[in-house]
Image (tube, rainbow, N blue to C red; front, side, top):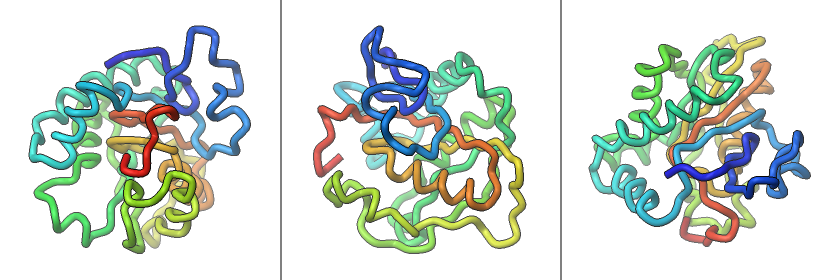
Length: 205
């Protein structure tokens, strides 16, 4: 599953494709995520396993992705600063359609391995189409305003790490990070099971 990846956006890069400001896919963008890690690229066998985990009841695959993602977190220089893991939430109506929510299983696996607690501080406040049903050029606009922190939470100065199963354009992670920063988070990182490379992004991924 491993391949060289940008430490800022987790996009695949060549050996000389990363600079201090990120790679060609993120350095000119106002990203809300400080840095990211991934278990693998969304391609081939990894993509097949991710779909089985996400959609087809293969909940035991949380341990496969969790183990590899834990190894990636061990190599990141920021992991030791993280105060809590934050699951990228789904709307409650969507959660009724599945026996489990893959990012939540992944977060629990990582929490056991890292001893970093999960903070239930983020919620999705509106439903609407999933990101994979929206053209990738419209995903940032589609996701804007769909998350909020739970009333009464206090995260001033906290360093948080978002957990998700797949990142395509990064719009969902950025929107979650924007909301967390607005509420007081000092830094927001991300750990994802898979990252879709730009040349593989289609309107159904």
